[in-house]
Length: 269
Image (cartoon, rainbow, N blue to C red):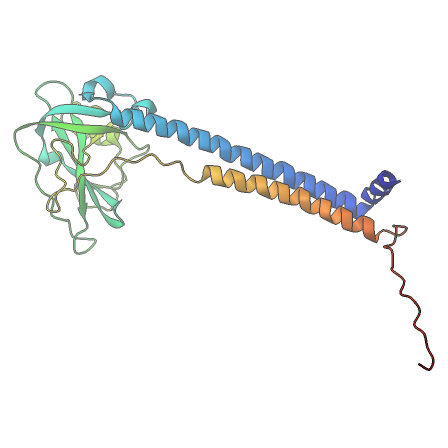
C-alpha cells in the first residue's frame, strides 16, 4: 500500500519534473566534486615535483636548458649554474611585474660565457620610477667573470609586445624573440631566475631584489570537492523530505490520531 502511494505520487507531473531536476543536480554536483578531486591530485603531483626540483643539486645550465626547444615542465625550478660575463648593453626591463603587492620591473641581463650560448638571467626586481614615463634606476650587473646559481623558468608564449615602450623595455619575456635581436647565440628554451640566497643574487633593497621560489600549496580543491558532494547530499535529502511531506498531505493518507477529551460535567456543584 505504501509503495503504491509513493509511486502514485511520483507519477504526478510536478513530481516527475522535481525528480528529474534533483537527478540532474545530483549528477552535476557529483561531477563537479570529482573534477575538484582530480584537480587536487594534479596539484599534489605538481607539489611533489616542485619539492623534488627545489631539493635537487645544481647542474650546468647547458645540461637542462634546451637551445631551441621549450623547457620541459619536469625541469622547471631546477637549480643550475652558469658562468660568464654580463652584457649590460643588452639588458631589458619587463614591465608591470608584481612583487609583494607592488608593481615594478624585472631586470633581465644576458650572461655570456667564453664559449657556447648565452643564457638570459632574471637578476631580480626593481620598483617603478616616479611616473610611468620614468625609467627606474637599475643597479649595474656585476662586472667581470661571474658564476651564478639560478633556477630554470619556461619562456612565455607569444611575442615581447614592446609597442609604444621605451627602448630596452618589454611587456613579456619571450626568450626566442629577444634572442633573435642579440649578436650571439642564446639558449632559447627558457631563462634562469636568481632566487633569494643564490650566489650572484642581490636581495638588498638597493639592488634588484632577488625573487623567491614558490612554496608547495595544496590549494582549495579538496574543500571544494567536499562542498560539491555535500550539495548533492542536500539536494537528495531535500527531495526525500518533500516526498514525505507530500505523502502526508496526499488525499487518503492516514489521519493522525486525535485524543478525545472526556466530557465535562455541567450542572450545579
